[in-house]
Amino acid sequence: MRRDKTSVSQEDYLKSIWEMLEEAQTPISARLAEDLRVTPPAVTAALKRMTRDGHVRVERTGRIDLTRKGRAVAERLALRHQLAEMLLTEVIGLSWAKAHDEAERMEHAISPEVEALLLKRFGNKKSCPHGVPMRGGIAKLRQRGAVLLAELRAAESGEIVCVYEKDRRFLEFLEGLHLRPATRVDVLKREYDETMTLRANNKKLHLGKPATSRIWVRRLHA
Image (cartoon, helix red, strand yellow):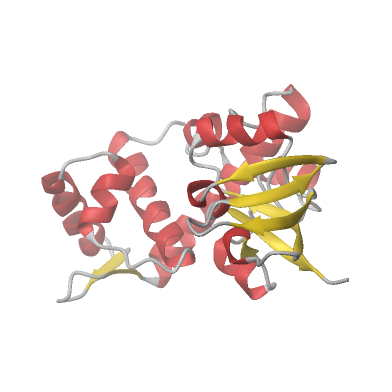
């Protein structure tokens, strides 16, 4: 049975807050409004409901935090999102670049029964198609030693482990360059403006900070 709109909306808020915490950002109303593309009054009303329902706490500074109950909802939704992405890409054959947007719509409608079957099918996977760890987020990448490509110096090398998945145009851009998880990149040069000259797939390419700050890599040591 499909959840009502209020429930779906609250799930979106909780997952957005969780993702900000994972990315070491401070969740505040303005960031939520920007991320979810809603008005500030809509965020204020939603936070009141979620506080009443025991999902979030709002500090006097404006920082928003998840309660244990709220975190459980957010992490369950994030897992269903990942399972939907794998179903879309590995079974249906949907483009890697389109999977995130489609999974955003599907994640709310996955029932516990379907979730269990998807876990049976994909539960051994370590990450989603974009490299986000299963049952985790960017924080888990950091714990495993991943760094942003932008942090590598000239002459260093890395293996792509994850890419920012919320921007379809960015994913299409990476797809065109064949830059996906498990791809090796060698940093040939760093410019003053932080543009990087790289070698990947036996080709030389140039990436600016907007791209290199959205790609996580595992450093490779000679």
